[in-house]
Each structure stands twice: as C-alpha cells, then as structure tokens.
Length: 122
Image 1: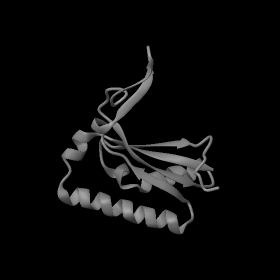
Image 2: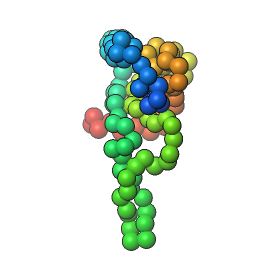
Image 3: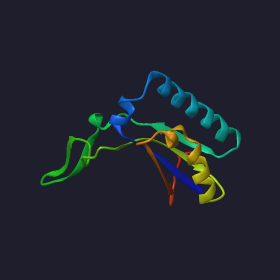
C-alpha cells in the first residue's frame, strides 16, 4: 500500500536552526532515503520551493485565472514529501518517525494513504 509522508515546514523554526542542525537534517534525509531504497519501500520524493514562489489557478469570471500563491495563509506549508510503498499504516508511521524532521520541535509529518496513483511508468 502506498502512503505519502508530507513534510510540514514552519519557516520560523527553520530560520532558527543552527548550521550544524541544518546539516544533520540534510544528512539524515540522505540516510533515510538510502535505507528505504535498500528495503524496496522507496517510490519517490520531492522537495518543494517555499510558498512565495507558488501560483494558484482557480475559476474566474472569464475562465481559469492565475494569481500569486499560496492558496491559504498559514504559518506552515508543505515543504516536500516521500512516497513509500509499505505493508501497512504502522510501517508508514514507523518510517515517518525516522525522518529527521520528526525530531525538530515545531515541524510535523503528515502520513496519508494514497487512493490512486499513476506514476507514468507504463
């Protein structure tokens, strides 16, 4: 079963991390990716730009309109995600706990089952 593990970022928390803490997080993500690739549970990962670079497309009076993002004001935003293929939710949660962000106060990981996926692989 596929699960998406979404990394919720609070920019205030990120701005207050030391260089050493930032480096540990980066190295931790590298180790995590290696681990889940080796176990065969890795499907994909993406890191996203901050919301200041977002654009929103929504219905307007003359058809779709494009505006600057983000969609909604929030102190947190989606910073990226991992897509994993695991046996069950318990395993997805176990993996989420291993992501370095899980140990940084003020950051969060949301784990959600994938109902449909087309990864374009044929």
